Image (tube, rainbow, N blue to C red; front, side):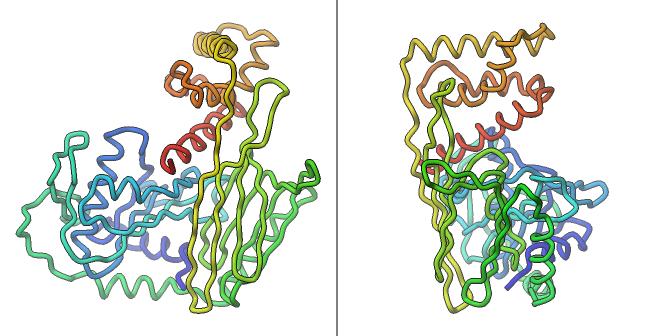
Length: 378
């Protein structure tokens, strides 16, 4: 079993990117250009490494080869993007790797591209890349090349050595459990459970009882034997359940207008553990967005546009404006689900102004996360 934190460190020990791994400060999947570049690297690494896994490490300052981290990313259907744009698409896995020195909420993204035979190519046009294009790694660069390029297996032995060096042991696991439990404070409730004598899940959160149901907020859930953060959110609330064979996370989003807020189930993630040292992760979207009177939503939408204009142009906010600003990401998300205006585009256009209001900006990022999850899983 591989300790993913050790794996990242071992990959970074090879200072220069090469033909089996790439490192990025961040990736942008919200634009065609960002998606195209990501697909290019997946295609190139897959074609250049048909006999071994290859990797992309995200959240790395390339100039100093230092770990700075990125926001938690939980797009469980990233494989759908790969399958839609690549022929002979490789299996990939995106994992959020926890590092103790990073600020709260920051992780390192690790994309694993599974070994497979056969040529991977772009299925259709995207950005400036044409359908049918084939990419390979030329050192640290992903380059288009001819179909008849000769592929030599030069990385398998080295990658196997790196993965072996990152193998887990009891010391690593115990250190990780102790480190996780040490974060406990008077507000957060912290637990751990061992599954099949191999997998250790730790979780913490602030307990809230509502309608005789137990919810966790400020949630942090990790599979510490692999250093993988399974869930992280300072805003959403979840219910956790488990038995001897599985661990389930039911995520809710609290949405509503004014004081009329309700919990809406968003997604259920279930880890199933097996005696042979393997596990599966199942994701199911449960979300049904709330619908409201369109005249009311148009009024709210126009009010939000006025608030965005004011914060962008430095106009003094009245008390009601501040109330509207705190609720703005949530109400704009409701407008998005009800097809009123262009709420997400408007918030993105005023993103820099929103950053000057930290709590609202956190809510804005959470709104984008919810929307992305619903979009990619629908």
